Length: 105
Image (cartoon, rainbow, N blue to C red; front, top):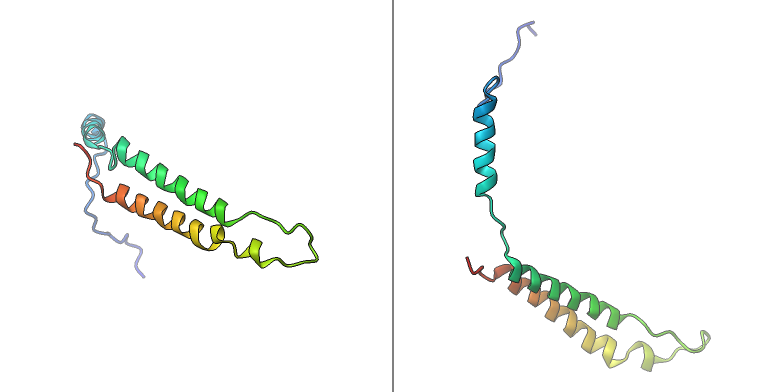
């Protein structure tokens, strides 16, 4: 290898010593940025996530009155195997709706 420095081509422009130009560029790009979701989208996402958490809470819970016995009615209750998964899937659908919902802007 030679002792020469390798030059790597870049696409970025380096403005050393031109602080004013860099500050103006940073200000314009920062002011042009806007949020991807507005407040209504975020509200729907929060509602959907709360539904998912509530579904998992419904799916958990319930302990056996006596640890030596196994009661299928408690473990395989309709709340755990039917209602809770429906609430979880509903929450996920609400989150998907919130992501695809168009903003008012």
